Length: 324
Image (tube, rainbow, N blue to C red):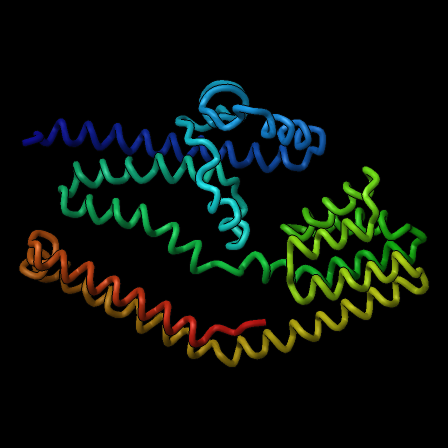
């Protein structure tokens, strides 16, 4: 058995290590966000990533305390291939390498702390939740990135129209709008502007954008911009018309979502209520807590109930989802 002094010392060390890992990971994320704003460093980083052996745990960009990306204590590479697209789809503004490193470091540390403080039973639950929880959260937030792009699109088109009225070319107008548009849409517009500056035809760069983001509103905007680039004419008026159309569409979609909000809230309440009641019962009745957390039958029932509750929430959320 571990004595109370040793347990307290281990807990303090583990908590300090967890805080240090989280702090360093946040610092690395901030450094990466600053570096993304610098085109020269972004180009250099892309060149380093394309070199052979860039994903091994030593050398530049390895995510360990050597070379670039040294703000993270342990290197885990860039993570699985599905993580970066999932973060983009969920509109989570953090690099995939930082998220993967924080995930791989945080789950073992939290499991160890729970093992020392509460025993192996609860530690197994914390480990399972730490492994499955982030993936489930990303799955639940899927589509937020596309929704944000759609919501930012009318403002970006209006910025393009204003730049066109001042005498800028369409390529220059897209570049100016990219600097004024936050999030993923601004990055996509900046990519189009950079491709056009490097000699790629503007229409082709816009078609590539529509291929990367096959959204209805974005396809409509790309069609209007490509038509203006090929035929000329009153480009600003056409772009303003597309922006007004997209704003009307977003307004109708927001109204439909507001009307369906009661169903979504009911689904959330019905899903959270069993968890809250179970936590209340376990905290007020020691026999219930002992059965649920210290017996095989109780653990099996707890896992089965949580799984069924999660499936019910997913199904109700799917029934009440509003597709654009």
